[in-house]
Length: 82
Image (tube, rainbow, N blue to C red; front, side, top):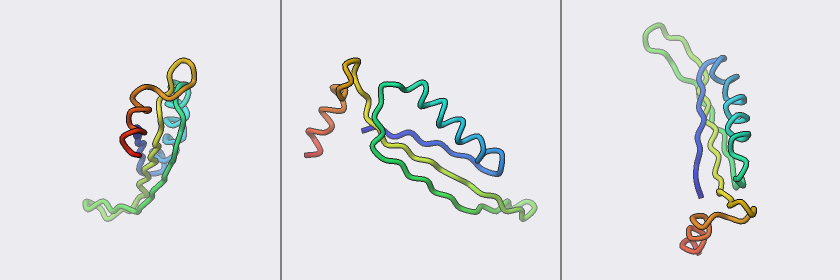
C-alpha cells in the first residue's frame, strides 16, 4: 500500500487542497483508494500572533495493473501483511 499526503495552510492553501487532490486523482487512474484521513489544527505565527488553519489529507492506496488487478508490488505487500 502506498501513501499520498496533501497539505495546505491558511484560507488559500485549504481551498487549493481540493484542486490538488482532484488533479492527482485524474493523473492516477490505476489506483484503488483504501482509506483517507483528514486532520486540521490551528497554528500560530510567532512573528505577529496571527492564527491560521493547517490541514493534511492523507490517502492510502494500491496501484493496479493494466488489467485492473492489484500490481505485483501490492500483491507482495498483501502477502507480507497476512
